[in-house]
Length: 112
Length: 114
Image (cartoon, rainbow over all chains, first blue to last red):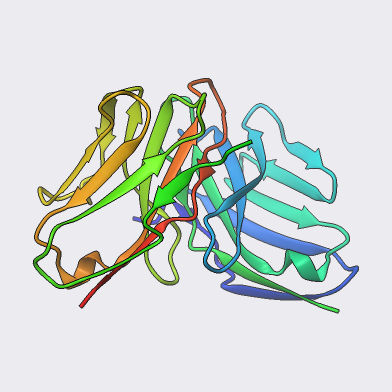
């Protein structure tokens, strides 16, 4: 039972353009959502999070949007840079949970 | 700022052997988590501790797996009688014990079973 899904295995974007990564969840008890970036041979690095009381959170080039009614979140990276090329995971958790539930990941490639 | 540290980074062993991994969390973090990641998948939760208390274990954690955090600081994850299916990246994370705190991950221990 995949409670968090990233339906796009990969995304290719030109440098300077916007990257949009999507994530869907099914468990309505989730109330805290995060995005992580992972380079090969390294652990996931925390990027940005959002709680369910908000619908948008920004940190520099990264913005996360949450649509609770659709159980959908997205990560926007503007402008995209070649160093952003990595695997991106969305994760969900909440005040009722200690653990995080992760999606399968999306490989982002930013071309110079 | 010292991050989460895991040791060893790589472990190669024969099927049937026991292995033990260590995780040192960020010093002020009282929550510690273990996850497992296989190729093409996201990390899957195994277990977590708040201080020295183990609060939750996944059904993925068979009887061959045991985790400890004896003094509420570092943690160990032991796998007994390893099997081919145990080959994976084992990730440790830590966080503060407050609402909506992100978990910070180490670089993992890659286990290969021959």
